[in-house]
Image (tube, rainbow, N blue to C red; front, side):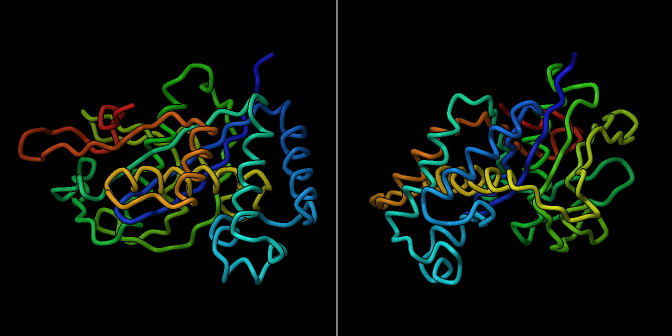
Length: 266
C-alpha cells in the first residue's frame, strides 16, 4: 500500500535571505507527531491548543500577549529545542528552498509570453523559495503520483508577478514548466488554499523556516553570535533540512526558464 504524505509549508525572511520550509509527515505518523507536540506544550505550562509561532515565542514583547507570557527568553528557546529533540527519529523529513536577494543581479525572466520581473520586495521571492523546496519532492519517486497533501500557512500578501499582481498564497503550487513550449503543468496545490485551515503541524514548518532563514543569513555576518543564534543553529541542525537554492541565470547568456528544476542547486 502506498504511503500518503502530509506536507506542511511556511516561509520566513531574515535580512536578504528568503526561505520556504516544508515538513513532511507520513500519514500513519500524524497522530503520534501531534501528540508529541501537544505533550511538550503541556510540559511548558500551556494548553495543547496553544499556537507555537516563532515571532511570538522568541520575542519578549510579542510573547507577553500570548499563553507563553510566563516563559523567559531562555525558557522560550528550551521549549523550541524540546520540540525538535522529542520529534527526532519519529519519521519527519524536511526540505527548504532558499533565495538570497544579493544573488539577484538581473530581472527574472518569465515563461514564454510573460513579462520579466524586477525584485523590489523580498516577499516577491517567496514563490521562488517555495519552488526550491517543493521541487525536491516532485522529482523524487517516493513522493510522486499525487501522494502528497500540501498544507501551507495562509498568506494574503499581494506581490507583483510577471506583469500582474497576485496573492502570495495563490502562487504556492508546484509547477513544471516546459522550457521548449513555455506550457505550465501544476502537480501539487494546497489543500487549504480557500478554506485557510491551519493544521497544528504548520507550527513545525514555521519553526523550520524561521530557524533556517536566520542560520543562512548569519553566514554573511561577522558579528559575535548571541545565545539565541546558537540555539537557532541547534534547532536547524536537529531538523536537518535538505536545501534547494535558487540560482539565477544571466538572461544575456541563457534562455533557461526561471522555474525549471535546473535553476535550483541541491
